[in-house]
Length: 471
Image (cartoon, rainbow, N blue to C red):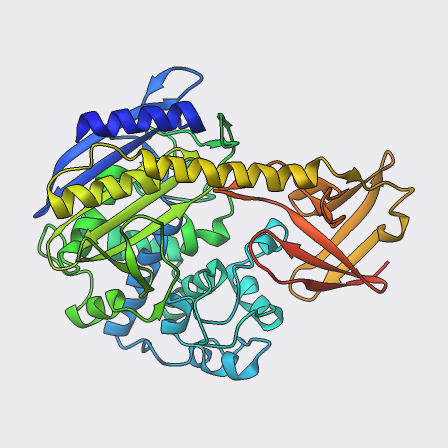
């Protein structure tokens, strides 16, 4: 596998800007293959090692669900009990959903809400405050009507765990109830200043689809329950090995009961297929995806941030699996190497080439670049041709954004998200592209006039949210 892995990663590096990563495969509680590739720090030529710590992004979700599984074991709540019983202030725009939303709904992405990640560019304060915002968040689907990936509900789930455990922070619970029993030593958390000191670190990079450059860390501590864990691949493997063994740590201690473990990996709702290769029949359980690969039942999850990509998974009932982390956003490395790992685990060897998967990704990249160019190369919106847009606009959950004149060019400003506005070449839609990417989805906003008000659509949903002009 090593030769094919490195050959594949070398092509991905040439064509998409991958900086580095780590891969580990295990069987029966032992890592039997590991490899470090590329650089932790490209500018200073510091090579990658297995000891480098990374952000694991959304692979943190299953850790939050494990806290919930333990809460169910402790009788603090039931999977299907309304969370409003523990959080009376909780509500949703759909009051029936607000009254009946359960841990199972939150942990399987069937609340009816789309991602709503954009809100965190400005709205913060506390996890409790983000919980209260649910009362004003627009839905795009009926309650329990289907799957929509939603980070916000995992933040609220983390807050619920804090409520149930008398205010103990999510971070403290993760360490005390999961990391310590696993013997995980390198665990750290998003947004805690200085908490990576004295640890070997893989620095974050983001590619424009062709070449990588250094980017910043995601630093909001409020979003920890949906994606805020940091650790190295050896410690991450301890977690995945325990899950592959039915929730059993290497020491023999159980992370939760067999009953709650079974609940975590039992499919709840169908999801779109993960890729165009062999992973089919995909569903979402509780903090985990499930699917079928080469006739084997797979439990898995991915995690993506601007500077990191993670993949973890195991074959159900076979006590084997994988963990891999790359320190470059927007490359095909994670999905391609996941396929390679699954081929090894299910068939005993990788394919001789994964060029077809790389080629398919490169085609999607080119489509992404065309979308960006349609907006960026459009007609600039100025104080002369867009004066009617200038103002401040408000939404009950998102608070306010402004459209303002900066030296004749109109700019959209929402917390940490700022971008000049253009009218797209193809359809004259008002849009803004700040130049950042989330995988193969360019970060952007679209504005649609609605009388004196504006509707906002962001890159994380199809919603056109109404913002009322306030001045």
